[in-house]
Image 1 (cartoon, helix red, strand yellow):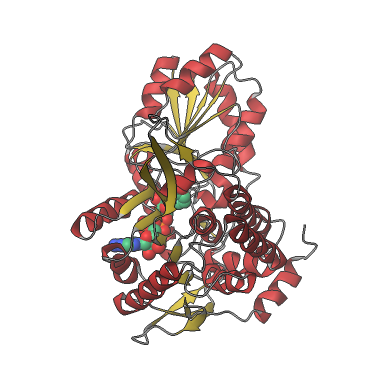
Image 2: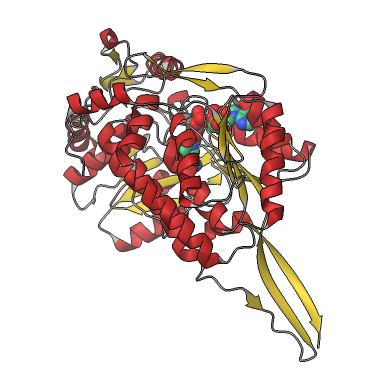
Length: 497
Ligand code: NAD
């Protein structure tokens, strides 16, 4: 763990040499059209870098290079053990550059530096290493055929993968895609969010340093409606893997149909319920977890526990515990290692959060703590963790993803009502429940339409289990061996004996 203090991080931030160009075929290049956009820090509004604004012309070049690299076989046909070695070196390099990468994500999107180090960089290296370690231990199949035939069932890389990722965990969402995509032998074009492009640009060079052949990993910063759309409509991109909003996820399905029916794998939004039954084993622990579930990463988390469903009989006792716990989450300068709530990603996000808080009040819900912008004098975009009581699940604040530190407290009386309320949104990413009754835990978990369910905990998990959504939270899964399905085609080869 880093021993740096706030002043050390601030000094390091000023010393950083930030690269803003695209990375194509093993080198940094400007956008073909010369376009750029300014990248500001939400911590204090300062200009961090001028970043290449790629568009369709850059997509053409990157896809052509990715395809050529794929066809050369330099990566796609090299032995899994060799790919493993390169990717493990890549993971080692991420760790060796942990402070620099953490700083890039913190400056770029405002998350606390302690989390950037412990969660984002550590989780990214882990994701790459886990996929690398797995790839030379996976066997293909021989079909149970008649004696005069041999049926081979083999997995092949899909080819050129475009990975379009969001800004809330810039490095980690990219790594969840890069690990399995590269381990299985694909060429990748990574399109980071225009709101946090810096760490993605940096790691392309580290991947090459680790031994990844030229053209296998390309990074195209730029806007969604320009370079993102160009990749999604491209006739020579085989697969899109996406993490981001449900709105854009749906649009990608349309692009696929309008172009080459490329495979589309979507990790989208959420409005996750956190159900606290009266027989929860430890109400203090449940309250601490409920606070963390909405305040961690400024609430800019796809699995944020944004709807707290509380059994009526304990609500008067439980809500004060939650309010107390959430007061331990305080917005502050993300470069201070003590800070646990940083800045929202930008002014647009701040506006979005403010407008939802206004909508909640207008609908009749009550703010019991928070509700306002703070630290405005810093030039940054900070918002206090906020709790709304008296929320009806039909309200806009309970149905739509706010993507900020705003918690909706909703009452229920029976387990059946809790499950019905929990499932009553378009989303199905994650859910949690708290009870000491084993049967109730299993029955409730079975009833929840969500890709991840946590019992007596919130937001647990590591690389060993799949992660993804039901309903409009997406399809396919990141993490675990299931993620490899997105990056491989299955081939049946029949041989007459
Ligand atoms: P977003 O959908 O606005 O953008 C995501 C990416 O898509 C960005 O790189 C963006 O530039 C690109 N994009 C935008 N328009 C595009 C277009 N027309 N064509 C192609 N690409 C386009 O999402 P965001 O605001 O960056 O991220 C927040 C969202 O991500 C939230 O909804 C959150 O729940 C979701 N998220 C989901 C998961 C998960 O694993 N399910 C994880 C993290 C974040």
